[in-house]
Image: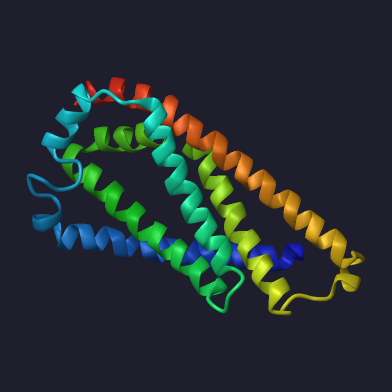
Length: 201
């Protein structure tokens, strides 16, 4: 995919994510009575439970790996169908809405400490998972374009079909590897940091 086309796609994603983020903020503000009740997002009861929870890292890793790779596999599968591009835009929109809702809920409940809670729940695994997620979405767009003949021919890029498939395969392996490392960090490192952070709430 040409660099100019990538920039265009990134711009579309950015504005789509930003619009969805604002929708998430509005949803949380207008629905705060239901979503921020005693059993709602980031409730005091749920935070207190986290202070005393004991995590089986091995089982947690299996759960996280299954969830992450399941989502990844579904996106890869959809990229081969007519729903390929729609699924990519749907993921960007959904992530924007969730991000807006979660950040708003944390700030409403805990103020500036809520931002710290969000950052603590994301570190260090999201430092890998977010870039890997963007790479995956772009890979899905390229795969959709290749399968449905929307991209220029391999000859126009000076590459054979075999070279393009090899590049796609190596990119996918790299995405899988980064996701795997992210899952390990999410399962074995983040719970330790988060449990220590929760003690200030």
